Amino acid sequence: MSRHGRFSWGGGAERSSEGVSAAASMAFRIASMVALAAVAAVLSGCAAPAVPVWRIEASRAVEQAVTSTLTGRSRAAQQQWRTAHEAAASAGRADVLARVALARCAVEQAALTRDACAAAQPYLADAGPQERAYAAYLGLAQAGEGGVSPARPTASDLPGPHQAIARALEAGATPAELARLLAAIDDPLARLVAGGVVWQAGRLDAAGVSLMVDTASQQGWRRPLAVWLGVQARLAEAAGDTEAATRARRRLDWVLGPAATGTP
Image (tube, rainbow, N blue to C red; front, side, top):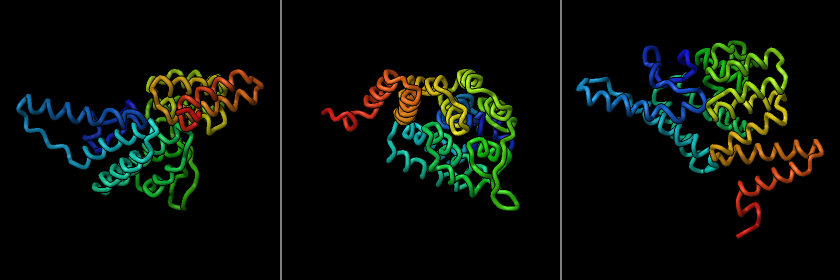
């Protein structure tokens, strides 16, 4: 991970321009960076080292899987995550396998789902401090010499967008303060992932949930939008705001489509 809070698929000196942020950039930037590097090498006539096939396949599969997961195409996402895992396994490295599993866990966390997170557990004992910190941040237990035990993330080892959130949670920040920090995260997927972390900690209020709804809506990410609209409706009902609850459920019907509304 670079100082900008990005994961990369390689090690040592390779952890540079191909790096990507733990949540969003891992999915959306690697492939384009690899392509640009290849084009630049051709144009300059340099004999640049070839990018290993497994890295290209893993980054492409993660990119596709994240998009499919967010847009609710679960069958395609399952296959793409499987492809990403198989490509990463070709290197036989715990850090790479952990990053693929944690990328999936993070995207699921954006929709308040944790079913896929256990897949990262077998690699954490042999992975690096950055992978273990991100796992702890997402709420996973870490494997240590004495077995599996919960651990607090070291904020400085987290991707950049999540460091302030981790520190604020540790310091006991209020929901209003956390909502302001979430709004300051530019990357929409990183914001949703962080919002999921704050929600799991019981520290996200109605304003924070509204921010999550708006973030998912602006991107057209059907799956997290549906989940956060459901949360918004329940909070409104609990607060006695039936109008807001009805509005959220109406939007939820639109997102879920004809199967939910009963219209042709």
